Amino acid sequence: MPARRFTVLIATAAIFLLTVSDVAWATMPPPKPGPLAEPQTTHQVGFPDRLYKFVIPPDNPESPAKVALGKALFFDPRLSVDNTVACANCHDPDKGFTDQLRTAMGVHAQFGQRNAPTVLNAMFNIEQFWDGRRATLEDQARDPILNPIEMGMPDQQTVVKKLNSIPEYQREFNAVFGQAPNYDNLVKAIAAYERTQIAFDSPFDRFMAGDDQALTAQQKRGWALFNGQGRCMSCHGWNPTRPLFTDDRFHNIGVSAHNAKFVPHARQALALLSQAGGPQEIDRLAIATDMSEVGRFLVTKQPHDIGAFRTMGLRNLYVTEPYFHDGSQATIWDTLDHYNKGGVQNPFLDGGIVPLGLSSQQEDDLAAFLLSLTSQRYMTQAKQEYARQFRISRTTRPQRDTAAAMGLKGREGPGFEGPFGDIGPSQQEMALNPALLGGY
Ligand code: HEC
Ligand code: HEC
Picture (cartoon, rainbow, N blue to C red):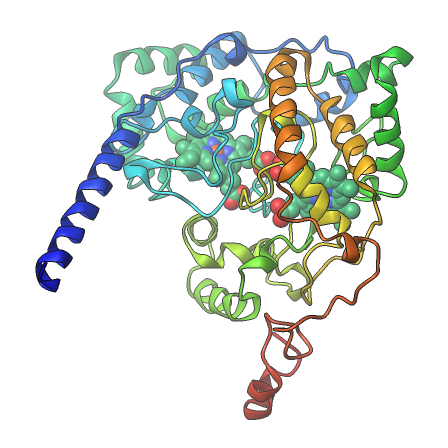
């Protein structure tokens, strides 16, 4: 076949495939609210009563009518530019309020840079998003609707106009807020619904409440490792008043180091943010560009925050796979192997990330312990996923590096050129441009 005709053939095939996959994705209907989408009772073992009182904002009290409105909005694809994507597409209650994809997919089958975190217990987050760029659930909800590759609406006015053209919403907004639909009340209603997604009531909560039988012997060994040799507790803190397994801080644990050119991306982000530094611009950089990988730095512009992301809570992990801000780890065992070898080296790595020397048996114990953080309503699903990941972990361990984990090998390898490893300027670059000294 002549080369030219072959090229045309390949190009046609590619366009065909793209179109087919686009249609296949785009016509996937948004999920319908099932039993797992129901507002949850606060009567759950382990539920932090006192903390809950602090997370309901005084200007947005809960009410059944507001929650019902918020739920309808959460599942409504009409909040997107082409009526295909609802919040629930990426935060599906049947998938632990995530999409179980590596990174999330919005309108026109566009994929973003980040993994969709769960909405379960998100009301307790001190800051929202992997980089904490928004403080409250109300403010968080403003962004995805207007993000070009999530729900793609051009501006607030268009959203409000669309809501006002739907008689049910006119009626319900009036009933709840005494006003026609507007953007502030839209995000208030959605946040009120999200605050009903409380998820405690796990074997671990029953164990802490005094039921010694709630954990298996293996899970108890895992809990001891979580506090001890695994050092997990130092970031994923648990205590009876904040039983959320997070310190609500930001750390570079070396996830981005796989693929990021931290220093150039940080410089590029600084230049762009000095022109337009509002929340919507940060949202765009975080979701749609390579600069996503500098993490918390987009918000604080502090060099020590380069590649830092929020410590995620650890409840219901076996329904919210895959893991980390970029969805880069397929199984819990992969995340454990990542920690065990001391993360991936980079100049901004958190001091708390060091080789752990855990044996395979100890990693299994930790993985079993994490299953005990599953809420009762997700337990059946989670056990299946745990079994699936367990099987994978017997044969496939891409992150495992036993010599590094045991401290038996140096951490510098080929490709670590300058004092900032493989991601900073090289000696040669610094010699040519002394301004690069200092690394950022
Ligand atoms: C296209 C998929 C997509 C859609 C649609 C979407 N989200 Fe998200 N959501 C994400 C991703 C990805 C993140 C993390 C982004 C980041 O941290 O930079 C996120 C983060 C969040 C968080 C923060 C959770 C945490 O632990 O930080 C909440 C809450 C949330 N979304 C609620 C909503 C609501 C409400 C809507 C609808 C108005 C919505 N999302 C629409 C993908 C989506
Ligand atoms: C230095 C602080 C720190 C320590 C120590 C730590 N973590 Fe993390 N953990 C984080 C941060 C920060 C993230 C998010 C990182 C990212 O995605 O870039 C995270 C994410 C995770 C995730 C993925 C959560 C999700 O929803 O994707 C799991 C699982 C996890 N950690 C388990 C553990 C376990 C088990 C240990 C102990 C072996 C541990 N962590 C120790 C800070 C820490």
